[in-house]
Length: 472
Image (cartoon, rainbow, N blue to C red; front, side, top):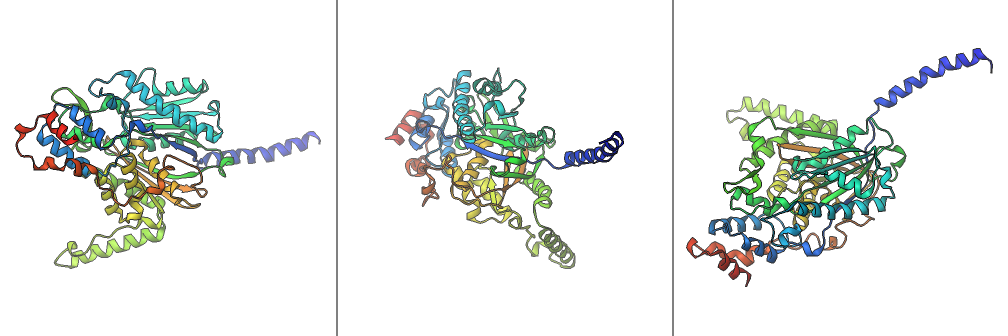
């Protein structure tokens, strides 16, 4: 081939190559979940009715009214007998946590879940390009990501992100970080680790707004392996379709409704304000308003718009106004097959169910996760997903909507597409999935401690005598 032909070929193919590279850069990068591993603590950390009673008995700051409040809160929480707590409360040291308690709690989770995830996926630690860790209510030096890097000997050039203070919505924030990184780095692996440290944050005072957190939060965590390698699509479990984050931190009421603070006696804990339901509803509405056009078919959006306009028109015509007819409801089931709801509590699950007009079948994964594992903060979504997988609900082509709330106040949601039928591999639910859903979700606390409601004289309530009587 002579020189002129080479020049002509270069002039033809080089612009085509540049055009292809430009188009390829503008393509939305893929974000796949290859695998995930939910942490299941050892049986000696199960926080059943008997153990919970002993923990309460040690708190000498509680009186009759606090006991009655705790009884109502626990009975209505939706939490069962097999949730897990931090080792510090089993050792009777919840009032005097140490830094080593935090480190030991995190190491137990890291070594178990990350190790199992990497072994099952066949991905070597040296292949990890991105590490994102979110543990909201505690930090250590060296950092928690540094602990992981040291234990698993990750590469020196691994991109590291350490998130704190994000609350229960942090895992989707972490996924969003990975999604954005994948726009820059191609053919990469990302390890996302999400958990919460309860050891230094167990509240030992009497403030009701802070005691409530002890009733809801339990130990857990999840490690996820993500990639943007299109060649691994056949191995992937889920593909991220879209993700929406809503932050109402500019509103004082929203900012203050979930706070880590100290009570009047200087005991630290997590404050949950009475305004939380209203704040969460407002954030959910704004978030769904943004994500709905991205995930629902046009026909459903048009139907909702037409029904809303007709109702608005007749509300002006009618003397009774709009209150005479029901509010139009958008049908999310037209674009979503499964709803993965944050297990923030029974009221949270019920509220989302009413707002989205969901059935008990839709809410079952969240209810059962709350019953079996409690509120494990940012990792709870993945236990809900694990329930769906263990029940073999997730089929190729299905679409899963995840919704979570977090301090700040935030509401984050995302849509996943299931890439293959799931359910063959074991997970944290494997040994108990056949017993779910149980015949009854009744909490045994009411049966054992219901007599507290019949007590009227606070002076008869010596703490040791009270719970000593209950434990007999």
